[in-house]
Figure: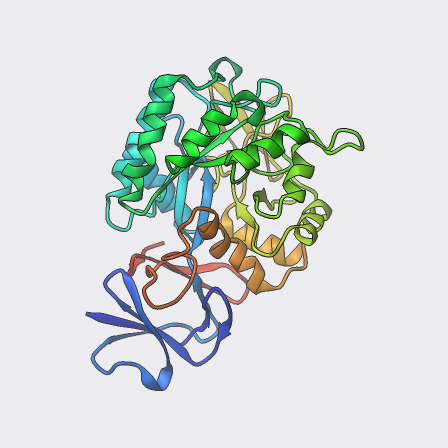
Length: 387
């Protein structure tokens, strides 16, 4: 049975449309048509006229949400719970993110993600391994005792994982420090289909440039967990700014990165190469005031998640809030803010052939927004989700 979503204004991922409807058949968008061309044999769902229907948000970095931390419980149920919690803020697809930990638990998380992807309308798009191949000089909140270099077993396992995920339209992202792996490792993982991102790194500008040539595709929460740019030590930040082809994920909570730095980044980078991530942790979507990570208490204080000594530990933000911040703090057009939360992350992950747009043939992953940019409803694979 075909269903038609009609009444709201529509943003396709490229432009705003008035007086149009979205025809959904199964899990795909069949057509975008003027309201006077709506099929007569379809089930009509009328949406509020003051609402905006947009491509569902995509988040490539979600450690937890709704009281669940993927590192604590690297299971199918945890991945699904995180995705369900994130949907309440408009995110219809995400990569549950597993930070530096024991090798066995890392593989358990990967297997959980593979299985979660197979569930209908799960919203799980693969997995992001943030570590353990990172710099001991820039661990952030990551546990230093688990930081290591990849061994032959890691390379065999991770090299085989992208093909398993790709069969279901998923991706494996691995955040690593370029100075901690050599180019042969980067080339091997990239050629296997792993999306490599530089992060938690103290790499020089020169080493970062070499890693980009070898196959590193982007940067994880740019500016954070890496040295600041200096006049004689430009480091990874300037390498990211200068490389037109490199993608940059950013946390737009006004805390992790000053808005002025984000505005500068957006002026320097080619259009489309900067995308939003939340780096969300378990308190997001709840009222809790603390949680534990590696047995340490993480406190929720005035929009920050911090250890008792003040180190940032992920972010206390959801995706629709990040979109609002891009409008209010950065002064960007709404259309561009929406792309940073949908089309651009889809492009970064190589999923923009079926996600990130409202267009025929694309998966019917949709978010309905109120005028003040809060979430009314979501659809994943054509199925409306309850919030």
